[in-house]
Image 1: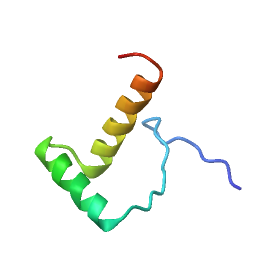
Image 2: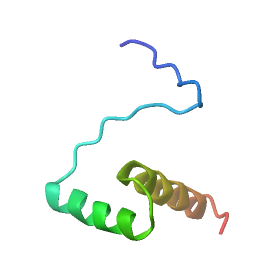
Image 3: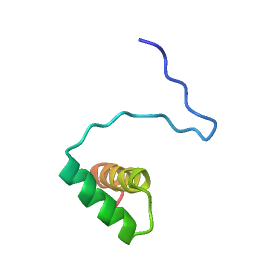
Image 4: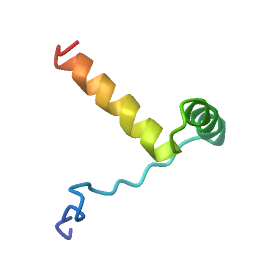
Length: 56
């Protein structure tokens, strides 16, 4: 497997396959919060990790 290098902004890519209904719900949520779907997913994951690590 090839080693993945972060982009210039320090981010890595991730292929994510999700149900179309879930994507539609994420799109609506992202639109309501003025984010892209990618930005919304990143926000949700960041908050979940923060809570998991006890940094509430």
